Image (cartoon, rainbow, N blue to C red; front, top):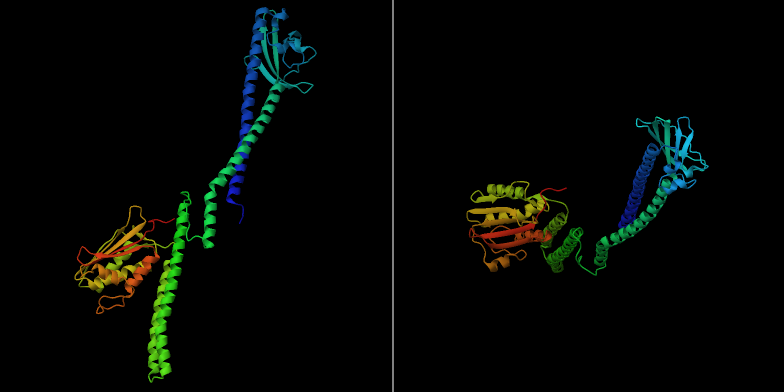
Length: 452
């Protein structure tokens, strides 16, 4: 992989593009200028030829002074601007003063229907001439040919000079544009530099998260990085808590076995079996929680929330045949949870099972979008049971607390629910339900209906 920076890539791509574009522009301008000069040059020669033809018709060729014309270039020897009048045998009848000592090369082109022909010819000194020649028929003179030439080398020299000046000007413009593109690249990539420095500060422990404002193109990346940092910190903190809880939970069985061993009790084997079984259950419980945390941290998963809630309602209907369980969910494939399907089943399963245990006769489930932006989904679970008072709600949310020891359970179901909700950055609320019992509001992150 090339280590060329984005700014350097942008600069070189812009520079190469500018060179090609400006070179093409220079060539195009030169070509357009050359054609414009050629049209003007040909129009001037045609005008001179037409004027000379008119003079020949008016005064003939006997009065050569009347044919001199007003253009001073026809009076300068070697100027390349010449005119001649010849008869059909090639005898010179009249000519401009500039022709003195000059022989105009013959042209091999054919006359067109109007009696006109033109061509470019080269003189012995390298000068190029453009020749216009018209053939006319006179009663007294017979057939004559009137020739007018212009210095085509002057036009070519002017085009060459224009091309050189255009290249210099465009090169200067290109240099300015290249400098501007470099400055724009540097300024445009400053947010990425700030992002890199912020990440270095986070790695060095100077900042907990990415702070500051970023452009609209980079802000989502910064938000995702902050979310990953939050999730990572939460997982680390939860792992520390679980290790601490496990260590604290193992202390008691170990102390019991140590005390029994010191006291040399008769049923030491039973004590060891009992306490090691308790320790095994603790280890299994915390391993399961660790697997939940690891599975929930996987990025890019999504689950059809409507399908999960609908399926749970069907399962609970079979388990609790005396309870009326009603589910209000959107069509499958329209409401997506941004997370693992097993986690959503664990969340909803614990809450729905708890609602069915305490409900008198009916349980209501509802899954719907949580906001207009599609960032969250809401799952509501209601029952018509006895419900909970505010102080009981506060108490039941504590780890492992149960209000009724007669109802089967361990009291860890709500702990798992709270743990998973925290992992996904959602919300978990207990309130008085419209049915009279308890209502659980579960707010979880949503995923897009379609993924690329």
